[in-house]
Amino acid sequence: MGRNLLINPAEMADRLGSLVDATPTDEAVPRLERWLADLIGGAGFDGYAWFSGRAFNPRRGGHDMWAVPPLFLNRFPPDWVATYLSEDFGAIDPVVVETLRRRLPYAWDAEQLAETHADPTRGFLNAACDHQVRRGVTLPVYGPGGEFALMSVISRAGPADFKRLVAEQAHALHLFSLHLQPLLAGLEGTLAPSSPSLSPREREVLTWTADGKTAAEISLILGIGERTVLHHTYKALRKLDSFSKPQAVAKALRLGLIEP
Image 1 (cartoon, helix red, strand yellow):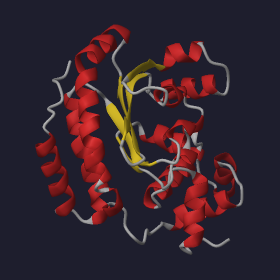
Image 2 (image 1 turned 180 degrees about the vertical axis):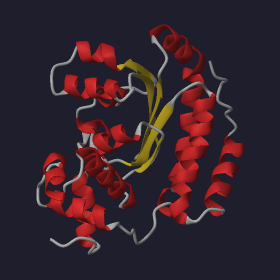
Image 3 (image 1 turned 90 degrees about the horizontal axis):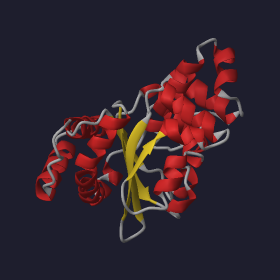
């Protein structure tokens, strides 16, 4: 198993500040992601995802809960992240639904959850397992001014080892997320480039998305694989600081990056 996360708020603040101050804007998020990956990995987990921002109503779930697109940092399987965001799976994710009812960490097992849910949720959970997202812990963090964050960590451990890992690390994860949320909230407005640049393929994919085409249809139109379409969709979402395809399309149109 891993070691407990070191919770030192002053050290965390200094480290985050130095990462951002010494890094060009377009490199800040990848460096933050690597820093968090080292900490989370050292605690025995195999990946993480962090969403934080200002929410109209965090209990709504999905991209509609956010007043503005959230800060998103992650080390989940890339194909799964691309699919999750482009399909807005947050709206049906039972882990998100359950976590939003809680104030404390929620340990979950996607294989077990799939046995108790019907489609489309069962299909979503089976897809998560296919992408090696089987077990994890998700934590909600509520700020005093409408700020909200979700942190999920995942593990490839079997059920027994995962149970021991959660027993060892759940408290440290909770403290870590509580200290991390206000620190990252102060950086959210400084991390996104003011004028994102999309590749020609990213613009093509968004243009067809704006026309109502699915990833499968776009793959046929452009003569590329559906996974490649999802990859370009995900990259465009990240560049546009968006949490769903409708948000990305709207922002790309507003900035003149694609034509209506």
